[in-house]
Image (tube, rainbow, N blue to C red; front, top):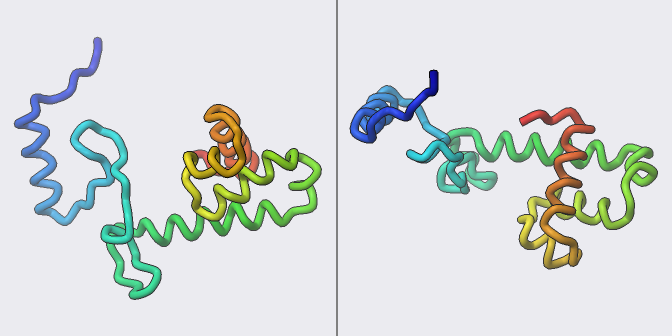
Length: 123
């Protein structure tokens, strides 16, 4: 038995009901995660809270930075991988990381994914 998407009208009605009940959906209608920016998260300047994106983002980057300060970081990762990870921990985009390092798309994403697994981030 395969699962099918509900008709668009029904899905829109469900989204509206959830929104009316105060649910803040992190997915767009296609099911992909929305890009969540300062207007929807916790603004680090005003600390106005939205859906908590800024708090989760800060915790994520703090976790990465802490793991990067471990002595094994320089032993386990090559200089190029460390550069990719440092740029990622700064919050730089993959496109920007590739521009700065000159690495290919597969190298940067695989490096970050492996580091996230090593740190214990499963999401």
